[in-house]
Amino acid sequence: MRNSRQSVVSVAALALAAVLASPASARTVYDGNWSVLIVTKRGPCDPAYRYRLSIRDGQVFYEGSAPVNVRGRVSAAGKVDVRVSAGSQGASGSGRLSRAYGQGEWRGVGSMRSCLGTWSARRR
Image 1 (cartoon, rainbow, N blue to C red):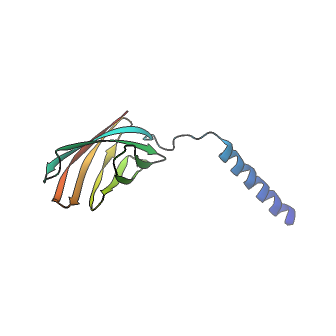
Image 2 (cartoon, one colour):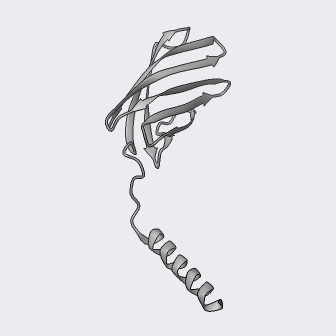
Image 3 (cartoon, helix red, strand yellow):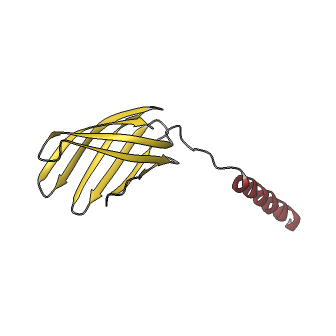
């Protein structure tokens, strides 16, 4: 019985070592660098913003230097859900990505009231 357990543990350890030693690869077809254009359709927000974002393992990351926090995910089917905040202002967006393009809607609330609009993204 003890040899059987040691064999299972040894096989599991070897499998884990093989996974950890293999080169990293993109986990989703959406992983990479993206340019996102955010357009305000209603409200007192700036008319448009452009951000550089990256997607790694389905997680969304901000690649700029402004003091902005971005948290988001892209599902295996391309569904996007993102939350952006800067100080007391925040916005959430949702939509869809394909391998090279995406679009959706966003809604935000800040010191100047609420805004809403659309976003579009292109792979860089």
